[in-house]
Image (cartoon, rainbow, N blue to C red; front, top):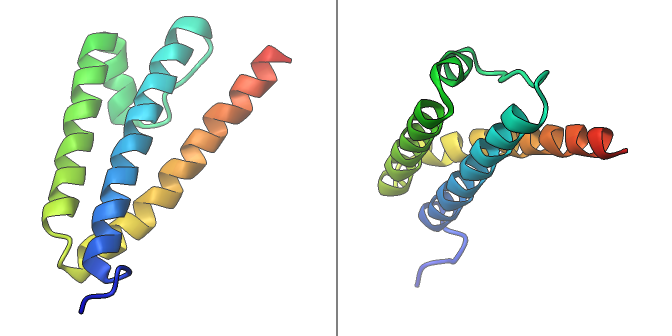
Length: 108
């Protein structure tokens, strides 16, 4: 009998969490782009795409996020996929924490 905390299960769950975090980050970035003119995208590639237009930014960000999360999900049986999710989820959590900090700073 398999344990519910088996690496494959954890990796798949974390890949889905990573997808949700990525989509939330995309949404927050677009909101800040329209609300706060001083907002700067931290990722240089995404900043370049955002300069070309919000639609290109969103399409690229969603495509990249879906591709990476799909790959991690499909390769969940590999230890490197677990490592990737264990690194990326806290990083994206921190990014969303920073979005929340800025939001609270702006509304106060």
